Length: 151
Image (cartoon, rainbow, N blue to C red; front, top):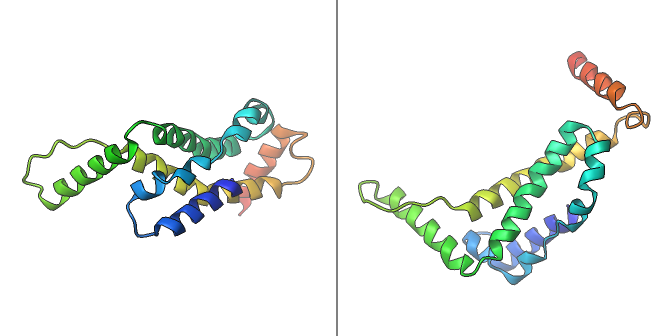
């Protein structure tokens, strides 16, 4: 995750933070984001990690994988720009008839950036649990729920 966070931040800084998302996701360096590590360990992680952490990791990696697939589409930049432009026309001129389409590039990037903000804290919370937690996952989940009720 740290690799991907750094890549997104660096590419964003290079193209300009105030530029359209097409400049970010269309940048050749954006495609260097990685999901390989997660793909290799996902099955084992599902068996070992608590459900809430698996959900958080999936909320990060799922939009990342989808976005990387979308970025690989032919004419991706012009397609995303067209979708953005249509949305802006409709917003500026609500009485005009504009054939709107959703913008999956923007949707997936927003999901990814949101998860990029929240997932590291969930990982840290999991790592801060007692060492016996992963060995006795049911007991750990019970202790975690009990701790939340006491707070």
